[in-house]
Length: 240
Image 1 (cartoon, rainbow, N blue to C red):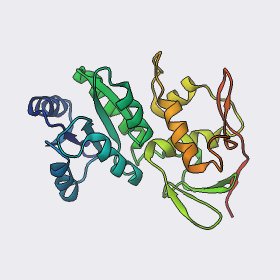
Image 2 (cartoon, rainbow, N blue to C red):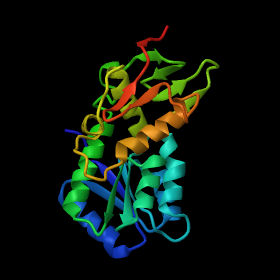
Image 3 (cartoon, one colour):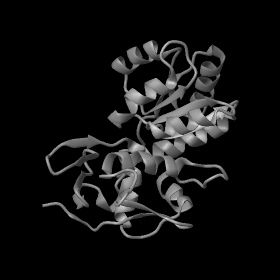
Image 4 (cartoon, rainbow, N blue to C red):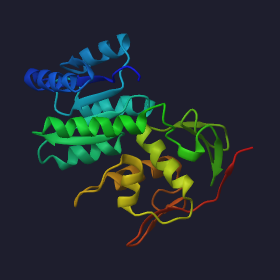
């Protein structure tokens, strides 16, 4: 059994960050807390963390800005905490790279379940790429390097993927030309069922398209199938 996961909790409300830390520690996790982005950056330099719990509304640099600069690195899963009813914050958070979100006020048990789910997906002992792990595969005009989680185009320019983007793309590549519903994709990538207003997959598809489609307005690689879901409309082969 490996060391307990180390969770960094960033929230400007002392009661929230301390109570969350106590609950997670009672459930076998290590925690470190920070009151804002400045303190968070200092903690990131000096420690290794397995997941970041990040509040959106903070003084100074807000959570969305933090997520925007950290998510492209793809090495630290992020769960956003948003104000109840702030649907825009949740959508934007997912679009810029958050792995999951939870609205305040929340049940600590639900946060724990979300953390465990995200950690399962990002655990390096479990290949995120499934059957593609350790391979370089070509599709459309791209090569995906699964070991480094980067896309490479014809001019050798590399485009990094976030953990959630990489997992979703790997699922689509493994099932190329198959139509997968949003529920199927959410189950395969996140291990959970979609709620009635859950737009997680749509937002992640939108982010992926901005990175891989020649024309985002007329997607040709990841196609939308009416009343069906999404389909990777390209052949997938081992890259030479």
